[in-house]
Image (cartoon, chains in turn cyan, blue):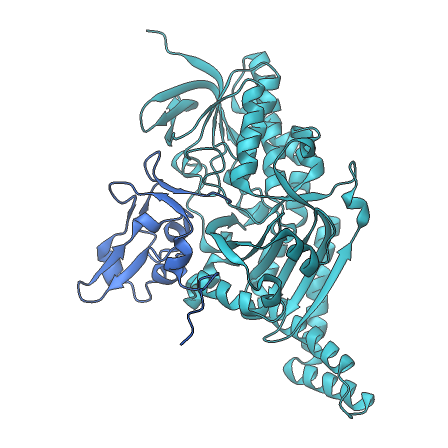
Length: 437
Length: 100
């Protein structure tokens, strides 16, 4: 009996998988998406926010019908000490205008589901509650996938099964990830009335704000805290390198509890009610931890390919773009009826020519630098900023000259001038790397 | 003693209570108990965001509360011996996020 072979099977109905599926379906190709959750989004977690421009490339004018929460007009950066903190915000009212949106906060269970519906409207078949256990290979070429129940054959398989990508490992694309290559994120969605959110976060209407936070209980650790505002809920969470948690015997939810108690954060969520607690891994290894992106019959997209720019919290947009490029590559391959690695190498070329791999290359040494220097990046220098402002603003009878001298004296006690000069050189090297690579 | 309702609970069990789970019949997480006995720090009992793992000193074994698993993958990667057999729960089982 001749077996049924579809054009493309996509594993995972997250941003990468759905971007691939909708691009393929709109081009008239047969595409089946296999998703292990009850519905697309049910097994997905992020901060977070989606970026308007890349998202609009896949879903034009999505803001008119998609379940978006708030459009972000401000980004605040906070450096927290034990009981103090410095917060700087950048606000741009332009980002509240259609055509100039920068990002929107969304909730994945609703957002992913809407995205999948658009893919279905375009002709893709989405099959939920299906766990893919391995790739099927014949003569070294990938020809399909095996699920717990059956086999699906395809001319091309796009692996978009997320950060854990068991398929990428099972197929020998790369060995198990190291604890330094991932961060563990925990988050809480906290219910608050819409007007309270507007008042506390200084917002009008449906505008929103994002916080990027270092320090607090994460001083000297490779970790970042985040806050996002939804229409009537607020997200507070943090992501810490798994190797840090592993070495320090820290429970992530206890760290989150301490984080929420910090005086800069506590008033923002006072009186709120916990709606949902969740956790997920975040690829952190960057460019150096990427597996091969393709071989005969298969391409890897999204978090499964470790396509995350941690410094900028960009993972979803990179996933969308990689899904689109994988689909475009598949379309070209299907026209030529050539599914070999050489034909699919177009996928890597597209990624390299776009901001996706250009950015990951620019930042490839940053994570290693941050790892090696977390005591100064996430400890000493932020503390000095707080110490400075503390001296600058306090009026207590001590003459200004003495305050500044005391600040400088303490700073030098904790870190010598030669060390600070060497720090400057290190920063310059990393900065240069970003600009020149 | 006033009875203040904890709207944002601190205990992990109360946090997990906000999640929707469909427990599978058997565990999808299987540690290698021989390695667990050798393991000094048992970091999984700390870094797991759902407190799935607990060391039972009396029985000298690692208890696995797989029903609480958030399927994050941290244990598979972070286990000192990398010896936790990790797969996804059977289709239809495990956690389902309402917000994500």
